[in-house]
Length: 79
Image (tube, rainbow, N blue to C red; front, top):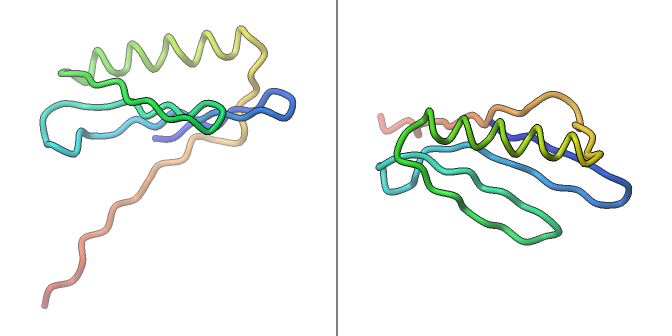
């Protein structure tokens, strides 16, 4: 899931995803063109942190841009 926010001319995003190593989950936060990854062992911990960030941004005047985007992953046809 990806959330997009805007405040004035600034924008930020937050993406929830599986860890590419296969162990755990990640939040990929992009602010002012800089990315940071926050790793989590459990989905509950990741979702708690995501909620914390979203609430803080909204309280600081960030506005949601549209509905959250769900990224779709496709598996190549190997037939």
